[in-house]
Amino acid sequence: MSDPYDQVAYVSRPFWQTHPAHLAVLGRLHGLDPAPVESARVLDVGAGEGGNLVPLALTLPGATFVGIDLAAAPVERGARTVRELGLPNVRLLQMDLLDAAEELGTFDYVIAHGLYSWTPPAVRDGLLDLLGRCLSPRGLAYVSYTALPGGRLRQVLREAMLAATPPELREDVPAFLARSRSVLALLAQGRPVMTPFDTAVAEEARRTLEREENVVFHDLLAPFFEPVSLGGFAAHAARHGLVHVADAGVVDSWNLLLRPEALEEAARLVPDDPLGRENLVDALRLRTLRQSILACAEASPVPEWAPPRIVGCHVSSSARETEPGTFELRVGGTLTLGRPEAAGFLRHLASIWPADEVVDDRWAALVAELFKYAAVGVWTVPSAAGRAGERPRGSPLARLQAGRGDPVVASLDHRSIQIVNPGVRRFLALLDGRRTREELAVEVGGTREEVDATLLHLEQLALLLPG
Image (cartoon, one colour):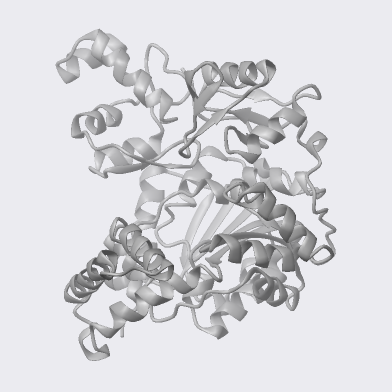
């Protein structure tokens, strides 16, 4: 079978959890001294067409970026994007990670998203060997993987979908995907009499049906799919000279999806083994994804956050206050703040978004608390996004993507932004800084008020450079 990533394009997009400035903040909170992001060397293993790497290179011009991938087609697509943007600080290379360690050098940050659980044992071992060899002494690595025990639910879906299409027929990818979606639809219906397990499988099938076909193909129908526990992953990393620091998903790190009394009981049952306790918590919440941050074995991360260590970092928030003290969060859900000073601080951040504030001693503890709930973002570098001036400028990458007609573009705060309206995409592509607002209104055949409203919308999506 040919490389699946050459057969079906995997839509490569930014993941804010992988941003080196986010990883550096978590490293600081856990007592480490990560390398400065502004001048870092960053490696993305399994970079595809660079959808996660190129936005970083755009907003961190003083850093150096290298992406490697085994599949030729996505690397060539990404290289075209790099050439069109004229970015001198990023290279995309077709390369087998098993051959990469010696010739690439060392890196301060390494990203391996969507790789570990979807490759054979030799490649998983090779990935961690690569990290152990190329990570600088102050370096941090990000590795995502399907977690146990929640990953068992996805294994049920996978086995059912594979059962519907014999191996000899799977080269017909459209037919393979169509059969697989039919199976998911059957699982989503459940049984006439549902057990709790049936309900969990049906809900997972419904969520999977909402995912893009290329994601289902590469995540659940890949030749290899191996969920792993945190303890198992940490032990594997340790054999390659690496230590587990934290999870890059902040809300997940604090397990805010569980009842407080469940967390207290888990701590009582497993008091002296942090990884064992986390394995228990993963079981209690049927966790399906881990985003582990690793450091060199010589590092000594502390288990608890030290909020004073984020003084000097940058904090921002796009939370929207729906009623006094209650805020709608960008990641979903709401947060109600009972303390007036906390609500006032979040209200202020929302009023200056997408700009940020520098964290000082007065606010470090509060910022850390809001960070736990994903009410704010905390970074070691200032925001690249801003408010539109008289001659608005959009992100060069987002303008290129919008000009190609891509429905999803990369924001300047490293997120994927869906723009359904073709007119808004065409408008974004025009924002090269050469046109005034009045000239834009003439160009699109609209009013100045409509232009201002669209610019405000794009500001809120962190797609515009400071005016």
